[in-house]
Image (cartoon, rainbow, N blue to C red; front, side, top):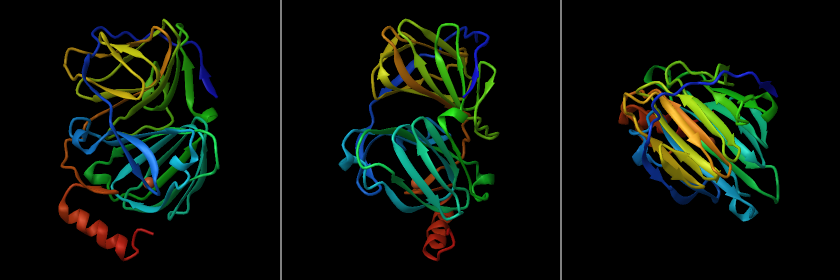
Length: 291
Ligand code: FE2
């Protein structure tokens, strides 16, 4: 673990409030994997550059055992954060990896990959998130890229108040995360708030931001956010960050990014800027040009 202990407090003068609480929609994807889609297609404009967020969590193997057999992607990045469980990954660009307990897999589909994500366990709990991050038009056809980060490889720090923060992307309190992206400047933090503790994070004006609580309850801007709920934070230009607190302790993710303000055209696993590019993606996939 790359742990940093001496962390300067980060002042937030005016916290963003909660614009809306979202509970998501239960659905299934892949070969019958049950999940909650918490960032749905209707929120893509509002939460630009983020396209989708799925939350999966079950102790019942029937809910996850089928996994996600071979399927294509083009035009964006997928970030899988595995809180608990083991999943193997294999793609047509030759990347292979095992994602487990607290690890992150970051895949840039770019011009296209075909990949599978399959459970490496027959029972026990599987829980985590998959976030889709858009690529700017100029990078949608870039070469595919892939990295696995084990929990130990992810930068992590503890604040004076005892809050443990894992920096998956972006920078928090001077600690640079595992991945940086220039165009979308994503911030992706996993935060463990002990009972009675609070945490402040500055967020640039104009960036879209949300939290998702997965254990306990979090207070943000005077509103309580419960387990498996997303809170979309407001974009008031006078608000310079978020202040989060928990009376009884909580775990959550905080995600923010710079909007691309480009047209989003999605057809299933392809996200491009025009209908013509979607037709091209489908044609390329059918002709075997993604593999
Ligand atoms: Fe996928």
